[in-house]
Amino acid sequence: MSAKRREAFLKITAGSGVPELDTERAAAQPIKTIDTGSHYFPRPSNKQITLAEIKDMLIGLSEKVDRLERKISNMNSRMSEGLNLSNETKFVKQTCAAIAKRLIVKNIYPTEDQFKIETEEYLLENEADFYEGMDDKDWNTYYEDKLAKPVNFFINLITFALC
Image 1 (cartoon, one colour):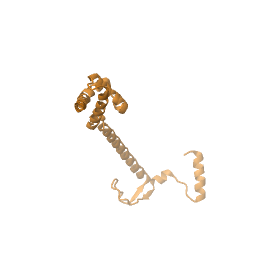
Image 2 (tube, rainbow, N blue to C red):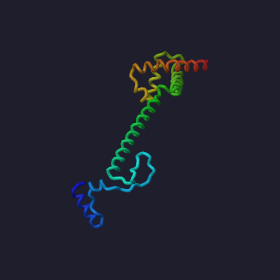
Image 3 (cartoon, rainbow, N blue to C red):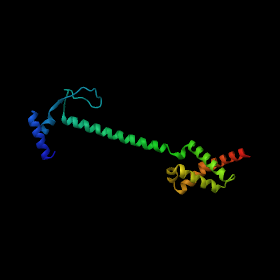
Image 4 (tube, one colour):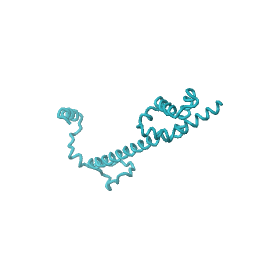
């Protein structure tokens, strides 16, 4: 506390009849506990607790809150990893159907390059974060594993329906 603040505090407390506080002496003075039924800390047998003990308890609570915040943060990061679009079957089906509809308008029998280009354009328009988060190797692997066959399947279905 700055000297000016301390002087102002002493003037206010002097006029109000509040005695000046001696922090070292106050820390050693016992304070009656309030029965809260807390099961986190054992109560002193004589129902007396000092400011130093309160400080220790608050430090313990602060550490527990920090641990809980870290656990929540870890859980949030795991949950966001679990919501990765690359593993979502619904996402793959919707993407393939939309790409097939776009391709059928341009060419009834598209080439593999047209499949891939249209897929890239669709993802850039609709899921830019997902598409831009992959490098070329990951994109090629993902396209071949998840999208190439389903897009071709949807194109064949639409072509068959038109014939």
